[in-house]
Image 1 (tube, rainbow, N blue to C red):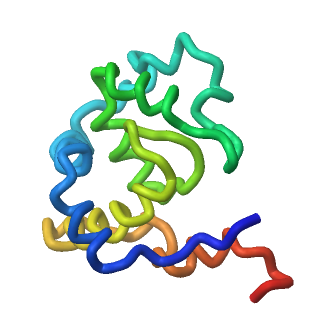
Image 2 (cartoon, rainbow, N blue to C red):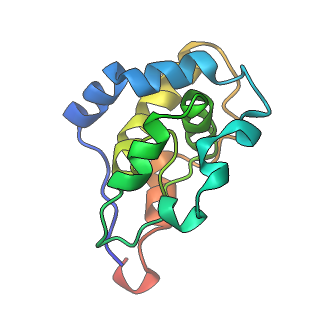
Length: 132
């Protein structure tokens, strides 16, 4: 297993301008039933969880055609999901977006309680215990 690193400042700055993140911010509490309308409903779930050595291009391409990709990405960022493809983003992209997301949600005055542990704590859970 590889160690997930903290996103660099320039990656977080780029994530703040990413149209996918901006869409997720605008659609984050828009639709509770988004899962029932996702393009992913008609595709093998394994497509969205490729092995680390496999490209995620097929899953990202499918997500880009989906009408609910903003709500999907918002959900993944809200729960801190760092695995698989969600809302046309890879886990690496979401790590930077997660930092930007938490900062924006806090600025908007929403409660971030229940959003999970701090990003660093979440990333450390991905590191095997024997390497810490």
